[in-house]
Length: 320
Image (cartoon, rainbow, N blue to C red; front, side, top):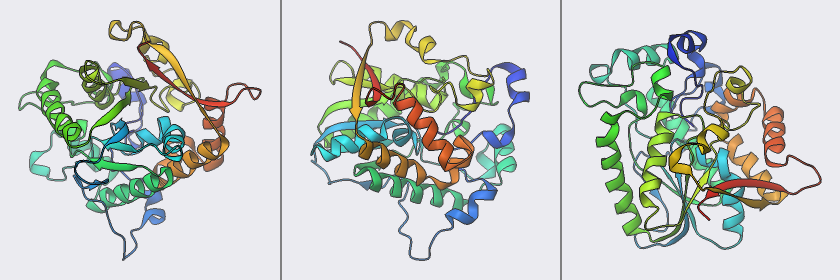
């Protein structure tokens, strides 16, 4: 999910504690003991692929901006599809980090200092992701793209917390083209029946970028969009506090999403439990997002089952 909290302008920046901004690899100080790497741990490396090899075809390719976005937003559906015998791969984009002070913007240096980031944090986050994907039963691949705070065009960069939730700037077009070529190569190697992509609820820059890629694929692939969790949940902290301007309703009102229809994937309790285990594998993130494991289950259950008389569902949006 990357950077969690949305706001706008200077007031949004002032209201946002530094600890609520999280990179794809950040691990809170208080959580580090719980995610210490075992000596024998096999750490997934950035760019490494955990799938059936070149030529393997997939029924669903889930595009995930950050480590944990796929599990949070559609983990139960992924587990259901795998159970049905379908092949699913999660392609996570922003898994590359840069701890070199010489190449960092002042804002990136600020974030690093506030979070006391280390290389070990990056390794721990990848190990968490590996464990989460095992819970869901799917394959996965890392696309080695830089997180938003590291990207620039030499002149412009995302230089504030508020900028990370503003509309995608024109200077990001070069990165969109680079990632589109990389995604096209992945799809050439692995024929895919359907693309599952973020709707970009919450307006996070990285989520917008991946959404833009998915829109370009619509001419050649069926595309289903998932509402980005927890941004879509009214009970998510920033939504309760009135910080986010980018609700599901506002997102669907954008011209590019005209005509999208809800498509509900019914999920059983066992699929929901697999989703909980997968999200729980991101040990370093649970407290940030949910305060505790019991609250995590309650929030997700309320989100996936609005009425106890109805089955649990994960809702997607697609063209009719």
